[in-house]
Image (cartoon, rainbow, N blue to C red):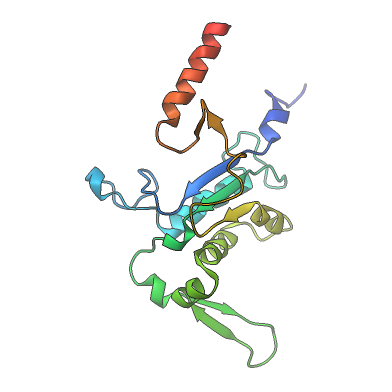
Length: 183
């Protein structure tokens, strides 16, 4: 008997997701009420959501040894939201195994030097499994400092509205209802 259920070729296809680092998010935010106090997702919550999408854990065919993840485009990385004093106290270390070569840099200096995209990339990299697929998965993360990016045509759309933007649920519902009426 076959273990395959459903359209596996469709499940293995890669989808492009768009996430804005500065837009308040109702489920990834740390502050839940009142609705006017909803903050943008913090760096850790944003990075963990991106890591899940890159690994493909949101798909029903997920397997740890198979690379079935999607592409993720993150915009507005210059406005990353961190809680507390992490921006000034979080320290990144690197070492080239030679004596006396330990280098450290704080998050605010790293953001000035390389931008918020590098900080997000380091956070996501730490949340991915440390195996042979890590570099391939991290290569599918496209992070940008502002709103502009060259992947606008790749993002999934329903009725002309990009998934994740305002009103995309209604457009998706209208497309689904149209398909049901056609059948």
